[in-house]
Image (cartoon, rainbow, N blue to C red; front, side, top):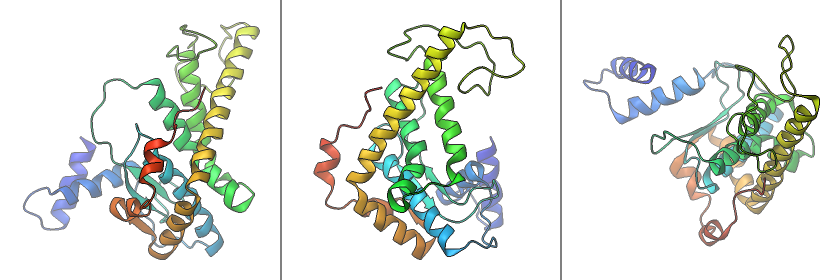
Length: 247
């Protein structure tokens, strides 16, 4: 509903007589990431870090089979506080999410932090929300969906929301310390496996990482066709790569 409302508003502002695909795409970005803040002053060093960070996300969106494709990659700050964003464009509605897709989503979330580590040999606070998202996803896999190969097909989800490693302060502890320790360790194992595999993939496409970041620094925002063109010559590698971590 919000998407349609934003599409209609954008169409009216552009004096369109009907809602076009361009209006819908603009609204998709607006709803997903908020208004772009072109007036915000960002240092060149921060722009460079953001460019590589977003390129790391975008590469994983492109090479992993069950996420993406990339719609827009941007280093323009947003109204939601992000220094930039990478927006996928889902090609179909889904009622269910597979274990492999959830692992891929964790890998994508970690892609920005990994790119920072590879290029700068250091990391920033810019990945905090990405890490939070990845941790919550891994925790849900273990405690809610029975997707842990070590814990098994059981449900330990005794919190309503905002649960990460450990148990939430102020709630009664329902799991034993032994079980909670196993949950914590398995969440960490999933994150570590996804991080390792995602890093392998980004290193495999390090030339694309550099080209993507350079193009972002030049243009600030690139679309799907421009981004996918950077993978020219990698077609066989894309088909042959083993994508899913052993988690």
